[in-house]
Length: 375
Image (cartoon, rainbow, N blue to C red):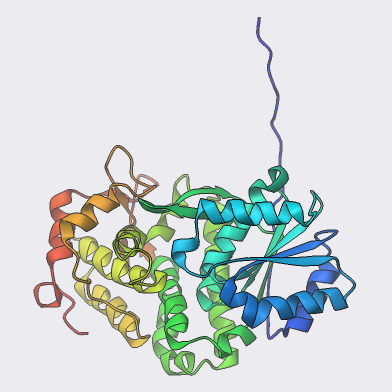
């Protein structure tokens, strides 16, 4: 005797990314107008609470919205299950219900943790992303990946949960520290390498204006980057195949972050180094021409990003890649470019298993022993 539970259904989880020069008052007005909840819980880290969180709460309440704020200690090390539990407990004690909406305010850490908390609170409530860093605007706020870290690996616990909307204000970019701005540019360069050779040339030709944070140029950088990532997510929301291309630089990068205990290297710095090493692997495999490998390294360097490995044993980096959430039976499939704007695929499958010897050789290889010796 069999009972079938029929759960076939179609869900439209489309959402908008609103890019503008919004003040906090204007952001509150936009959130109020869109009406994604009967009440709003701002979730942010302790630094963002001081800078923007309390002021945004005030602006929401000026709009006669029921709102509260929950914060956690800043830092990648605090993107943990312990802090998710603390945030959920505070939300419950403050009376937020199934019709409430979380406002994920801050950088990628806040967006990941707040989005994950929203996805599991009372079995899932609405949330919106209000990214305050360039990295979050161009990458982590888009695509619905949420999650937290375990001691042995980054983003190893999480869920796919799409926001109702993303509000990207270029006003936040003006006050970003130089290193935070560079962090975001690592993901911008990555996106161009994956998808668009013309956009990569645009970045090369406008590097000075980008570094000067000219508002019109930065709005175009954010718009184009969001558009490119949106096309990837639309094709493969849950990383069954094509979305793997977004992992360029992240397999090696996550291992570097872990070895640095999430303190020694920012995400953007680690991804930049990861892109250089993984491009080197592609060159060693005969997939990527040396001059293209060099162009990518030069552009990362121009945006103030590191292109050389820190002093970690290559064997330790390799061992951690095998614990990456993308690894299968201890084997890691790398996302590798064949040219700027085009990623490797074979019979429609994106990614390639790389043997340990090649990975170790790429990790041990400095600028003096590879094709890219120009930075």
